[in-house]
Length: 322
Ligand code: SAM
Ligand code: SF4
Image 1 (cartoon, rainbow, N blue to C red):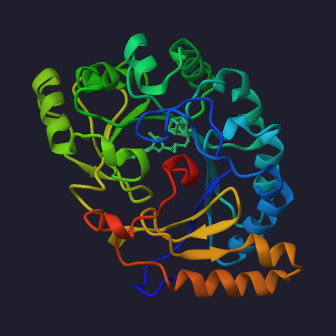
Image 2 (tube, rainbow, N blue to C red):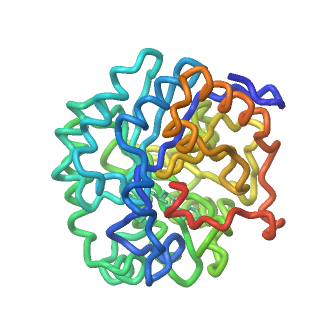
C-alpha cells in the first residue's frame, strides 16, 4: 500500500484501550481522561477483521499499544488471532511493564515477537513522581522475566529536564550486561507533553559519551524503525535515539494507527483519518472497508510540524498509543 508521497505503508499500530494503570506526567493528566465507553471499544473480532483487511492491503507488522495494552483481559487471544492472519510477519507490543512478568509466557506462546518496555528511570522516587505509582519493582521483574524467556526487548525512555535528566546514564546501563536496546525518545508536544521540557537527542548522546566514552560503532540506521543506534565499549545492547523534534524522519514513515474506538489515524500529530468502526458496525463488507482505508491512506500528511500546535490532534498520547 503506497501513500500519495510514494511511501510504503506496512506497519499498523493498534491502541487496544485508552485505560492505563499509570499516570505518566507527559502522557496522561493526573485526573485521568474521560474513558471511551466499553461498547465503543473495538472487540477482538472487529480488531482482527481490520487486521485481516489491512494485511490484504500490504500491512506486515503490527504493534499493540494503548493506554496500557496488558489491561485488556485475555489479550493473548487477540495476539493468537492476529498471528493467524496471512501476511502478518511480526507482532510487537509496547507496555509499561507493570504486569509483564505475569504475561510474558502467554504473550510469547501466543505469538508476540518483540516487546518494548517504557521506563524513564530506575530510581523508585523518580518513578513515583513520573508515573504516580510505586511499581518500579514490578517493571524490573517484568523485564527480567521477558528477557529470561528470550523475548527481544527494547527499553524506551523519554528524557525530561528537571524530571529524569539525572537518570539518563542509569537507564543506558540497562543495555550494558544484557542484549537489550535502550532508546531515548524526544518528548513530543502532544497532550500533556506540551507542558514539559524535553531533552533533545544530541544532548543525551553527549551526556552518554562523557560518561561511557566515544561510541564503538558509528550511528546505524534501523530500516524498520525511526531510531538510529550506536554501541558503547563493553555494552551488549545498543543505545538508540528517536528524534521526532530534532531530526524529523517523516520521509521514511511507514505507519498508520488504529485507535481503540476504531479510528484510522494517519499521522501521530494530525487528526486526519477515517472512522472504520461505524461502517463496520453498519454492515460494510471487507471490500468497502478496504476502499475506505485505501482512500484514507492517500490523505496521509507528508510530515508532522509540531511548531503548528493549533493543527495538533486534541487526543492525549494515552488515547493514541504513541
Ligand atoms: N502504556 C504503554 C507504554 O507506556 O509503553 C503504551 C502506550 S504509551 C502512550 C506509548 C509510548 O508513548 C511510551 O513509550 C511513552 O513513553 C510514549 N509517550 C507518551 N507521551 C509521549 C510524549 N508526549 N512524547 C514522547 N513520547 C511519549
Ligand atoms: Fe500509561 Fe503508557 Fe501513558 Fe504512561 S505512557 S500513562 S504507561 S499509556
